[in-house]
Each structure stands twice: as structure tokens, then as C-alpha cells.
Image 1 (cartoon, rainbow, N blue to C red):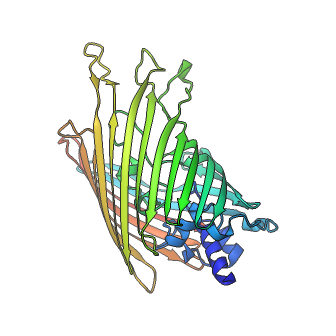
Image 2: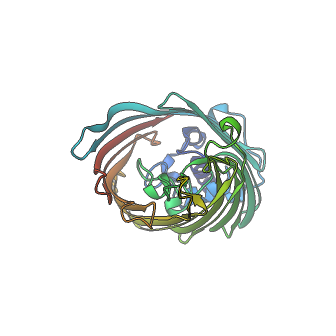
Image 3: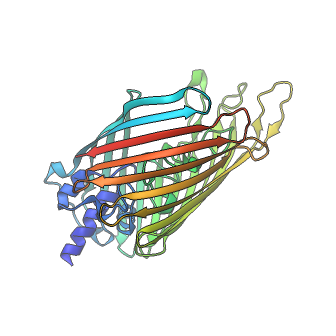
Length: 398
């Protein structure tokens, strides 16, 4: 029983970063176990053990209320660097991108504190030279069969970033258009974007997690001299793991306000709604997964002073993915089809994307990860040329 608890504790520490894009090797060192204990097929995707530990914060559910050991600081510190090559070409035109880069270099300090609490801090130097700070505080109370929790901080507060099926991080490099792009052409809300907020959640029977989030909302240059105006949006989520290997289904809804759309009145708020669902099924080394989302913006001005018609545009998006992981090398091969229509009232606002790729964890405990993707974009608008691209990443964490 003790060895099982140690294995599970390792999995939560590897998979419980509620705001991060990857596991932390410091937690692997802590228990001398591989990252694959809770990441399948590879970091950052979570399996059932990893999902359970994430839901419980930095502890296994049966360890809620037990004091954490803070004596070894090396078990709380880690670093990660990502090197990349990207080539994107427009049909009949020049390269849109063709370069090597270091898109991310991060330092982490994270882990459980006391009997109920945990903290996460990440300094990430982006490709543009800016340094982003992501951090959170969390607490969990109850027992392994039923518990409640609270998170507050900045990071992945919306639908994508860690959870069941498509609410988890992507297998390889790119996030589906459903989460990475705005669902509508009028309000640029990305469901995979970072926000500041607070979340209250409850987990029942270790399989069902529901939550409510209060968020800082979306501000488009509103306020005096472009200063931000504080808003409060709300998101509701529910996720269910329906088997022991991590298959599940999730639904989420978001309601908010956008400021800055009306030039004459920058504090005027325009409402928007987003609803998303995702599901996956894992059978042996095969997995199928998909997601669907719709969005609507209400009372949006056209921007034409001579025709101030108020619109309520809507958009939708879906994606389907299949993948297979080889037994010997844990190499995962996948293919994904995506569709995005940012204005369903227009005839030429849709876009499709096809993606194929592979991801390979290396070394043990998998501190290296290599991934590659090929994609092709097609646009319904005849004036918009297609795009093809190649991306590859080598991630080193230590």
C-alpha cells in the first residue's frame, strides 16, 4: 500500500501543475520515478492517475490532510527550455516563417505546502524577449471520495490547459483551432488563453469534477487613455472520467463582457457566450478524441457610423483526432482534422486544417521530448491563399 501511494504521489506531482504546460522534473526526482507514471502517451498529456492527482492539487486524494515534506528544496525547483524550427509557406507566395528559435525558457518553483495547500510559480521568457509570470495558490479539503478545493492565480483558467480529453494539453505541438483561435470574428477570446481569476471546485467519487470560475474578462483597450477596466466573467465546467485509463467527457460554458468595441463609449460592454464539449476513448494503444465549441456575441456594432446596425454574430468549431503509440519506443503517431467558422452568417468565413505528427519521449525519466507536426490550411474565401507548414520542437527539462 505504501509503494502504491508513492507511485500515485509521484503521478500527482508530475501531472498536477494546474496552470503549467508541462510536468516538472523536480517532482520526478523527488520519487525517483519516470514522468510516464501519469503522462500518457507523453508529457504533457495526462492519464487517469495524472488527472486524479491534478484534481486533488499537489496530493493524491487519500493524502489530503497529510503534511508535505519541505526539507529538500531541489524537489521544488526545475527548469525547461524549448528549441524550435518552424517553416510556413503561403500557396503561390513566399515563406511566412522559416527560422530556428527558442520559443520558451522557464524556471519553476512549485509543490505542496502544509496539509492542504500548494503553490506554483513559473517565470517564462517568451520568444519576443518578454518575461511572463504565471502563479497560483490552491487548497483542497475533504477525503479521497469527496473533496472541495479553491484555486486563485493567473494561468490556464478556461477550457484548455489540463483535464479530460480535449481539455488537456495537446499531444504534440499545436492546440486545435477550437481553443487557439477566437470562435467569432468580432471578439477575440481564445479558450486556451491565460486569465487571472479564482476557481471553486468539487470532486465526487474521484471521477466527476465540477467548478465555477470568476475571471478578469476581456478588455480591448478600454478605459481612460487605454487603461484596463476591470470586469468579472464566469465559467462553469464539468468533467467525468468514465474508465480507469483516462477516457472521459467534459463540458464547459463561459459568459462574459468585452470592453472597447464602441469607440464613442469605451466602457460599454458587449456580451459574449462560449460553450464547448470534448470526449475521448482509449483502447490499449489507440485513442480517438474530438471536441466541439460554439460562440455568440450579442449587440456588436458594425463600426460604420452611417449604418450603425447591431449584430449578434455566431461561430463554431470542431476537431477530430486519432493516434497510436508504439510499444517499444513509446512513439506516438497522430492525425487531426479541424474546422473553424468564425461567422456562420457569412459564406466565406470558414477554415479547415489537417495535421499529422509524431511525438517521442526520450531518456529516463523522459526529460527530453521531441515532436514534429505538418499542417495544411484551407480557407473558404477565394482571396485567401492556403498555407502549409512544418514545426518541430525539442524540449529539455531538468
